[in-house]
Every structure is written in C-alpha cells, then in structure tokens.
Length: 137
Image (cartoon, rainbow, N blue to C red; front, side, top):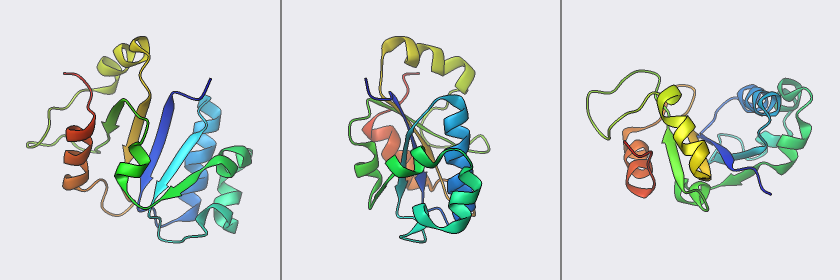
C-alpha cells in the first residue's frame, strides 16, 4: 500500500533543508517527498542534501521534482497548506492537532505543502490548495 501522506516543498533554495526534511520524514515513518521547482535542478544529488539526509537516502531516491503545485497534488484527496503564523484573511484555518485525527481516520491521501525558506508559502498557493482540496472545517 502506498504511503498515504505526501510532503510537498515549494521552491526550496537550500539542499540541506531538503535533506533535513527527508531525514525527519524517515524518522516519522513517511516516505513520499515531492519538490516543486527547487532552486537547483540537481538538489536531490547535491552533497549538502545527502549529508543532511543522513540515513534517509531511500526517501531522496524516491523523491520527485515537478514544475507545478497541481502536479505535486495529483492523487491527493486532502491538502494542508502550512503557515508559520495565523493569517487574518483567506481560507479557514485549522490547528493540526484538531484536524489530523479526522483525516487519518477517513483514509485520505494527505499532502502537506510547505513554502520556501525565505518567504514561506505564497498566498496564491494557499488559495490553490484550498480551492483544489482542503481540510474540512
């Protein structure tokens, strides 16, 4: 059975962060990583990526690079667009601890979307996630 959880990183600029994400995913038992238009096309094979992945080479080997958020969301039935701070506008928000148990129990293929290191997730990408597939509120 394929992993029901996908981690999507948008426009990453540092290979070390991709590697660290892969390592964290592996430790938590997740395996599906998709990168949307990373700064470096060869990010999955860069020295810093591999070093920071430490023990999660299999996650990197299976990772995919795609050109659009829509491609990254293909096959996902619910998406969680992450934000560092609460937003006063836009789609409704839900705290992870409150929302995730219901998603897990419903058997959804869930995608977690994270923005770039410098700017986070762009407002238009949050809206794309909300319009395409969103957490029930």
